[in-house]
Structures are given as structure tokens and as C-alpha cells.
Image (tube, rainbow, N blue to C red; front, side):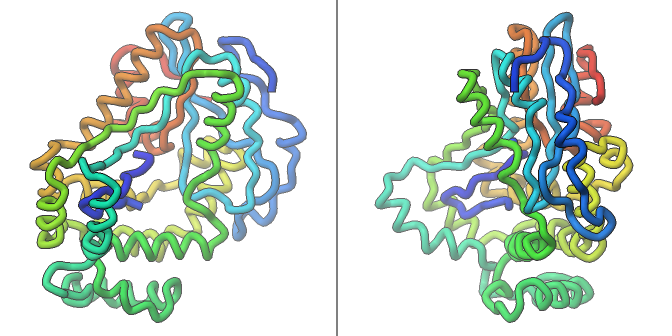
Length: 337
């Protein structure tokens, strides 16, 4: 999923000219020749082409899919001519899958709930991370916290999931990477420029009883140790791979993206948030709803449009049971870049 928007229950789970309809334009030669600096140790900078697109087709109708990764190089400028060329001759752009949590409250009522919402980040009963997480995991946390968060003591009272998210954000900022803001702003601008309709695939969840839900959430312990542990593991052993993956995306090296291990704590953290009892009993299986919404939009687009553009997290294009695999299992033809 692209994001899990912060809601009243305090959850936050921290993408040229026209081209022929059946052919992706070649990358700009000037962009392809842009210098790449110290790929083994540093993240790339300057103008970079990004990866090619997957082609999903049914007859002469085509859905072009761009895989995205996070984080990406902070100082990279994406050469997006290929994607903009596809959007220029598309009839529809499909937004990445997302979840939005909202509540039936006016602005004044929302403001009154803000202190309680922020307080929901904290562990129930005033517990600290040291009291909740296994001792060996806490030792690893302290090392990483000292390195990336310094002497911040407030985070010690946070739930493991929120503490992990804070640590991760600071770590990637210090590593020359950034979590987003590269692909979708370009896509939105191109869609507006060429007057192409954008289809949202966001699943909107309305919390009818936000005050009760918030109170329940504040007193509930999340099953988020997997999220916490995988975040620590990723920062301990995967920062180098994150740089390599970001570099591979920037220069369009699909083979490297497929070969690199894809350790992503986001799925574990998303699962901890969406499967919290306070949500599940109100809205059911959120992940399944998001998947159905996006796949339905993709199939409808393939049925009615000659050309459609969409973007998905790269893991959904590469993993054997991802969204792309499910389209292929339904009989659509899939061609890798």
C-alpha cells in the first residue's frame, strides 16, 4: 500500500511527446549517459532514467505498470520522459493502492481529540519499550536509537511500531535517501497536463464511533513486535542493500532489482496496524479490501481503455503472489521490461 493515513484512532503507518500505443518510447540518451557516482558506497545523484515498465495486455488494450521502491536517492532527479509519454496517450491513470481512515467529526471535535490521538502512540499503562520488547531486541534498539535519534527519551514510552517508524525515518534521512515524493507528483502533473482522468483506489474507512475507538485503542497492546524487530534488522543489515536498490531503480537496472533481497518491514508494520482489534471488528480485513479495489480498477481499465498507466510498489510486481501475478493468473498477458 502506498500509505495508511492517520485517523482519529491514532494509526499512521509510516509517482515528451506522444508514443505509439503498443510501444514504450526509448529512454533519453542524454539521461542514460548521466554520471553515476560511487554506486557501491554512495547513492546516485543527478538525472536518472528510472526503470522500464511492465506491460499487461488483453488483446490490443494495454496497462503500463511502473514499479516503485522506497526509499530513493535524495538528490536524484528522475528522467520521467517514458512515463510522461505513456500518460500523454493514455485514457486513464490508476493511483497506487492506499487506505484512508476518517471519522464523522467536525473540525472543532477533531481538534479536541488531537491530544488523545497523540497519546495513543504511547504504550498502555505507562509501559516503556524496555518493559515490552525482548531484552536482546532492546539492546539492539538502544544502539540504533543512539546513532539516529540521539538522547530522545520520549520515544521510550511509544508503542514498538511507532518507535520503529520514527527510527526508520531518521535513519534513511541520514543515509542520503528519502521515503517518497519522486514518482507520484510527476504522474499527477502529467495527468493534469494531458487531461487524463485519475482513478483513486483508496479504500476509505469511516469510523462511526471515534471517541470509543480511540479509547479502546489506547488501552490495547498491538501485535507489533514483528514490525519492531524487522525494522531493527533492516537498519542493521539492509542499509547497504537499500542504497543498492535505490541506485538500481534510479538507473533502471531491473535485473539488479530482481536479484537484490527485498527485506521490507513495511508489510509487518502495516499488518500490525490494520489487524489491530479496534479496526478489524469495525471494518474487517483491510488488506483484502485494498487488493480487491486495485485489481478491480486495473481489470476495468484493461476492458475499456486502449492505454492505461499505473504504478505499484516493486514488491507487488516481483513477488510470486503479488498483484501482477494475480493479473497473470486471470489470463492477462504480462511482459517484463
